Image (tube, rainbow, N blue to C red; front, side, top):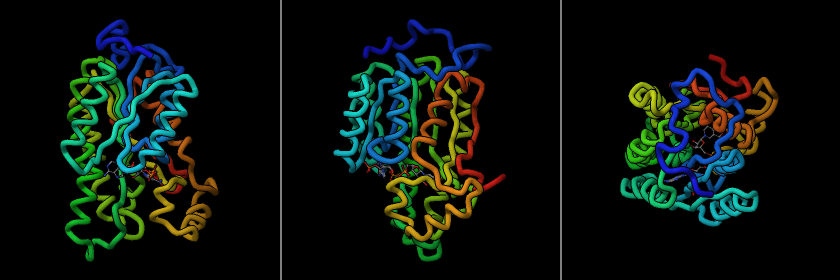
Length: 273
Ligand SMILES: NC(=O)c1ccc[n+]([C@@H]2O[C@H](COP(=O)([O-])OP(=O)(O)OC[C@H]3O[C@@H](n4cnc5c(N)ncnc54)[C@H](OP(=O)(O)O)[C@@H]3O)[C@@H](O)[C@H]2O)c1
């Protein structure tokens, strides 16, 4: 797929138009999805590619999984590129964006999905290294990727960013996820700041998933706790990565052209504001 050069031919900015497409079509757009080898990121990369976008499939350690994400996209007739980088390393954050820009020549959509609790430990016992690594990975890395992407997103005239926060922003973090929750809280503020600063060329929104069954929980949550989460949730189950991806697809599409600065709960009613 050859996406159109920035600024042409779809030069009208749907973010400022009163009407437009509502079908979620993303043909001709280029998206960067961080952490796209596994879980929510993988599902999002597949959903955006299915909608017609060329996808930068970023990964850190999961090279094989990311290659499988890209292979699936290509088998389904889509296109994309693999991008490796550690978001806790500043130079990597900038290089990821530069590599995609060099190949795709534009960027319309940024999904800041990658993130991790690093290690679960109560704040009173949290070593400085864990705190710093959590902020570096979840907050500073996202800031640096976003900062590098902003000129490209502005240039396309209809940019969209979605930040993947967490229900932990509301709860303070379950079972020792305080440093992670603090970083995600920073992303919440960043979402609102950017929603003002980048409008109207770029819309910026965030999602706050509840408990979604992904490798995240294989690593950080016991099967017993996952079962409790199911029964504690009004819908009687935990979420699936594809259900989060469907919301992200909506938010980055023209169907959501008047949605800016929103923080969307995706938690089965587990937490009601
Ligand atoms: N699952 C949930 O219940 C839930 C709830 C709320 C929010 N979230 C958020 O959803 C996002 C995706 O998580 P997931 O549930 O889909 O779990 P996951 O499959 O474990 O995904 C986490 C992703 O983050 C990437 N990542 C971790 N550390 C990184 C680093 N230093 N540099 C670059 N990438 C890094 C991983 O890449 P590699 O594997 O390539 O290293 C992986 O793709 C995370 O931000 C998480 O906080 C999840």
